[in-house]
Length: 281
Length: 281
Image (cartoon, rainbow over all chains, first blue to last red):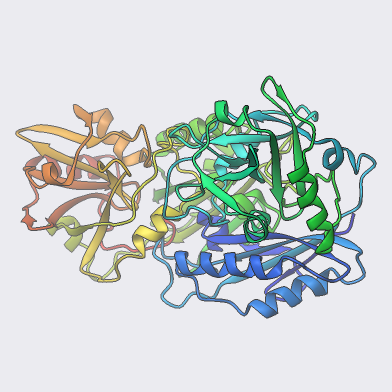
């Protein structure tokens, strides 16, 4: 698998050890899927990146140039996953942000090959577990896809059983927020709900797409209540809509809301590369 | 000012954009002072780094080799500040840590020149403000000097008045924890106290030194109570013991406990490079 990379629009896979992304996690990232040279969810990625820049007081980058760079690197690939990392750039003066930061942009694109087990997760669903690692409540950064990801790393380190597709995470108040690298949805008697991401968690781009095309209630949700759902699924910009088949003692068959959203996903040009465990989810 | 650098013991100032330090802030750092080829507080830096490795499940590095590398880079410098960054190394499989990670070690050393205003902060003390940015409560990482430092960055971004020497930070429960890049101590009727760092904050190496040589009560402390203190000071491995001269409407003269600890600092070989606003505090 060849990964194509650039740093500040020049072919390179290296950044300075004084880059604030490396020293402090001082930046943002986006992970997107590019199919046949198109990034169907790009406007949502752009919106989240812009919100992140505003919240972290990063200068707003040229969004079209970023999109074009990702698409350029994906040239000739039928299906690709891109990671875009935007940091506050280099700095040598401690935590204080440089008065005129020159952000670093790193882009990497890798082919997204259908795997042998391509269809199983999308068709049959995935088993999920509950992580012991909890998300701290920090409204200042809630919803952003910033580079401070130790909580997700430690949560994902809790299991290595390949039969487990994802781990659900609670916040420190005990409410479900999301999976380590996906958002969570559930259907109760025809009502579609997703956890609020106002105190922590990432407001996923796939989650935003679902919110735009369906009536969804954003709620606090605990594990006991989740087990009573009629349908449960995960959303990810790269992995799409993944039915949850098993959680704790409960099992489900993929339900009609899940299937309808998978059809919507295909409709916007994002078929299911399921089973993918690729770079930079 | 020449900075001397190495990555994995080879002269370089570059790391891969797939380094997990850059992609997720998945690692730890130490900032230390090296005076005449000696790092007096090294055993405490080593202890914190080892604790961090255990908590983040990083393989324990060869600590002597790390110390030797920092001291080698400081060769010929009378007084230097070193930053040691240890990450989980490169990885391309999402949040899941590689089963056999090969950590990245980046070391940078810069001369610590006495500035023109050298003595003022140490002799007269510094003015501190209260930051609006709060620390999330996350016991899992409390005390560690990990690479997820967005809270400190945003707190430090709140002011650019050079008359303000530091900013104090509350946790989301409203208790004082530390300054953006230093720990906090106060004296009440002869009792020395410092905020607990069991829920968030960094357990500073200079803080550990004070705890080792004085009776100190680790407590919850709020700003109103702090304003009633007889003495207030900050501690930093690089900046030493800094009296607090002004906080809110309160002013202090450096007191006897502060002065005694400054004398202890000189005694272990760490004179006052005060006023320093150098790299990688």
